[in-house]
Image (cartoon, rainbow, N blue to C red; front, side, top):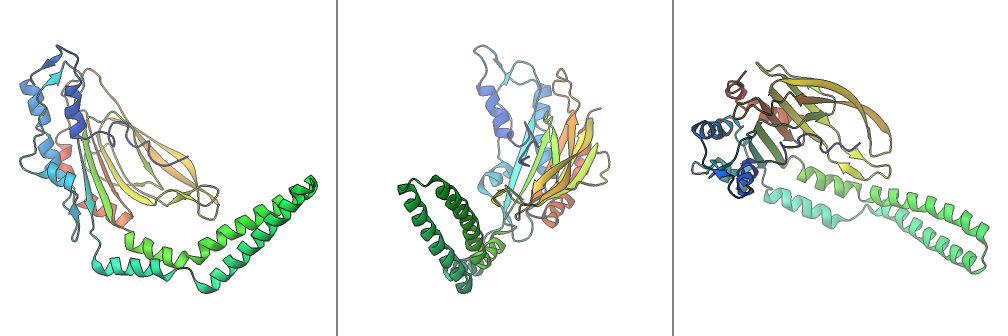
Amino acid sequence: MKRRYIIVILFSGLSLASTLARAEGCEEGDQRPLTAAEKTFFAKFTVLRSAVPKAPAGWQLNDDSQAKMAADFDYLPDYQCGAGNFYIGLGLTYQRPISQADSDREMAAMRAGPDPAKQKKVDALMAEQQAMMQKMMDAAQKQDYKAMEALGKQNDAIGKQLAAAQKDASSQSRATMDAVQADREAKADIAINNQGDVVCYGSPKVLKVAGAAAAYSCVAPAAFDSEGNQVDPARAEVMVVFGKYAVQSYDWERTTSDGKTVKDSYVQMKPEWDDKAGTKIQNITVDLEGDNQVRAEGLYKDTNLASLQKLIQH
């Protein structure tokens, strides 16, 4: 099962901008000015903005996030479409700029090429594979189907050995480049009235947060397919939900880079939802994400959760 991402049907896909865009899709004659209560609701965007963590030392917000945090950011919709449920979301992306030293280090790794000793094994396997291909062509010309089948199996085995040898030959350079690119991006997403389930993958650890329905810190290692190709990067997340939620834990399995199946777990937080609640604040979801647990929990510690908890209307 791929990890990315049941997390939020409305949460990760929606931002305040998409909330505003809904008004543009009103049917003719359905547009109306915001009521005082609705203006009060959307003004809670400023509470979200004051609650999000600051950029860590040496980090910065990307351009889109900086615009959302600007004092002159216009968060109020021009009009509203009839009645219905109300949502506010604020998503920020933090980035750690690459230094010249790191850039030089990465470039040197790219220029270094594969390990010479390991490259010899790659060359030998490539020659063996070419010879095998010739044998298969000869067998095909003779219409020796039994030989073709046997040679095909041998060729498949050589192909797997070659792929592994190529990966091993470039492992040192790749490890250096991965190290340079690691911990370059983190995210903080806070939403009011998120109707989607929130899911935290990777050995969930319970966190104690005053007034929260649930709070977890999760670390999900990178996941791979049966061929050893990475399908999900390693990520760490802290998730906190306020309001009424049903919480359930589940088991899941992931595949490691060497093809082994490892048992893991995740937790699903499902909101209790009232479709007729209008501008009432029913829940608040907080999702803090980084490449590692230290980064995710650092954002968590810098988030003003107490101010968010006060918004919940019971």
